[in-house]
Image 1: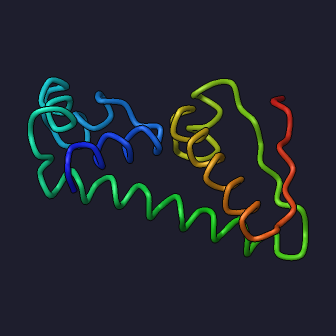
Image 2: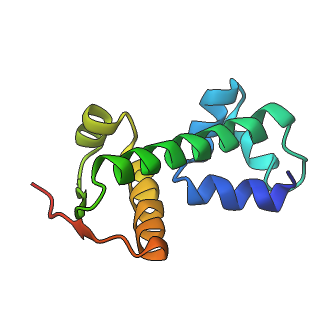
Length: 117
């Protein structure tokens, strides 16, 4: 994975440089460099691929769980809610929800974005 791919995938997954640095046990400066001047290491690229894979697994689970029904997509406004309900930060959840909407639209599956409580 090259630097541009790494940056695009990180952003699409709703991850910050801090998230990457924490997961890889490096400084934020190092994580930023992987997107601009240095090739990201294989383990960092695998981490992003695993996060993406987890999102795809969640999406498949939602589609299976709500087969032949409207897929509900909750809206949240606080990290506490998304961490409790999904184990994701608000930014990560919003990226996941966007991916779920795109998959539903692509497959012609009905969905409803629910208002925040």
